[in-house]
Image (cartoon, rainbow, N blue to C red; front, side, top):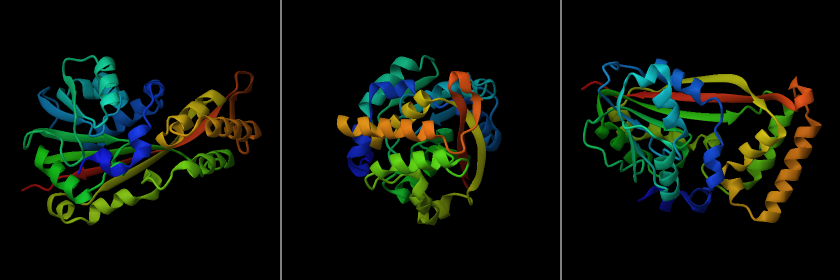
Amino acid sequence: MSLLSSIGRPAARGYLPTLSRIAVRTTSNMVGVVHDLAKTGFGDGTNELYDRIGSGTGIFTRALLTHPEWSKDIGQLRAVEPSEGMRKVFAKTVIDARASVEKGFFDHTGAEDGEADLVVIAQAFHWCPDYNAAAAEFARVLKPGGVVALIWNLEDREAAPWVAQLRDRIELHEQGTPQFRLGLWRKLFETDNYRKYFQPPVEQVWSYHLEGSLEIVTNRAFSKSYVAIQPEDVKVQIKEDIRAIVERGEGKKWIDQSQGLFEYPYKTYVVILRQKQT
């Protein structure tokens, strides 16, 4: 079963061209963290790297290719993405001879057996429709001892009341979709194929803040597929509500009030899945 036919309309329709311009500025930090946690046998410039299953428009891919630690380690980077629209943006914006993008899914990457040192899935694995099949596919494409890195960024509702209010407002529109925050993706670890092929997961979480503004917060909210697909009248109301929440600003910490800049609390979640040695 293909990813798009399984995840439902919000994700399938949620892509808008403007989303390719919305890059959460934690990407560089995330890349460094993944390098430190996942690196195993890299360094000769011949490595196959899959960034990522569900590569989107290539924001994380571009960060990998230019990061000082990863750049020297990557021999070839192959991305797979089910959305044709996102693949087109990827092809236009990821300009590197080592990188390519093809149609693919969590359970069908199109890779050869034992071809990849590392599979990176950023901001996407919660859409997986079949965890057992995905675990089998990851094990198939990885070299012995290879690694899968699952990565998410999420606004930190515990850091400030205004962030909790913001998330409560936009999450009203999730429409039953399997969002990361719900933790449904953790069922992966209970599957037969995961237990057969992978070691117990290693997880780390980091708290930090970005530089935020009303525009940045609004754009980030509208980068979420379940918000982006709403009718225009609903979008207008969401924008008004976001403005009210940010202007009320319960617990907001200013960086430069004259410029309208404040701390935007976030957390990054990294889960490392290391293949068992056979």
